[in-house]
Amino acid sequence: MKVFEFIPEGVSDCKVTAWLHSHNESQVLQRGKRPAVIIIPGGGYFGVSDREAEPIAGKYFAAGYHTFVLYYSVKEKARNFQPLCQLASTVAHLRKYADVWHVAENQIAVCGFSAGGHLAASLGTLYKEAKFLEVFGREDHIRPDAMILGYSVITSDEFTHVGTIKHVSGEQPGSSGYAWFGLDQHVHKDTPPTFMWHTAQDEVVPVENSLKMAAALSAAKIPFELHILPEGPHGMSVCTKEVESEDAYCARWMDWSIAWLSKIFNFTL
Image (tube, rainbow, N blue to C red; front, side):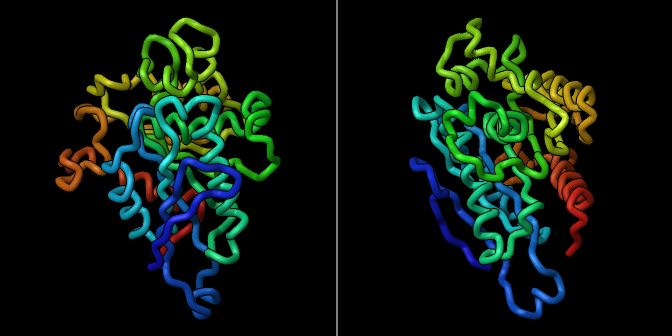
């Protein structure tokens, strides 16, 4: 295993921690490149949660994936698409260094939680939006190949997490600029396949966020898998004692997401 940090090319005020599997010539002949998962922790665009960083990266790494955790801009620096530029640049960076790091350049998933799920879903829905591309200013290949969204902020309506949308938009509820960041309205025919999970008891980010995203994906005929678990609070991460949310029933989402992603990418250990 090789662990290191880098700043994606073309952006600042962020960092990515990478966990790469060891590589040798026999592995090249046997396996070739490995898929990658970029983990985007939550925190309401106010902070970045450690509970949704390395614990999740470790699970996907153990399943054979190269893993990367993005620590993106928050608070006032979350405006003007800066976190989205950082995530897009991370995807582009992985594709640029795919041969060096042995990353399968067409098998890159984004995996976000809460506000980090909003950021992950933003890339999957807004990557060709003129409003974003005017700020990003590049023509890199930034579309993710799959999305994994955990108890994610999606809408900008009465079911949203107001603080998340206020931070990322820089606007007040009721304004057009605030409403624009409701991602269910931006789903299109080229949105990536998506895995989602949520709990029905979530009082911070209501389950309607995932339900509305599922409806939008269905309308656009995008393959998706959705799991609504009956109990559990917001922010459960991997649902273990390590992250102070031990729940074996809800923890099943991790195995489900790995099985789903392995099917999407046709990848096995």
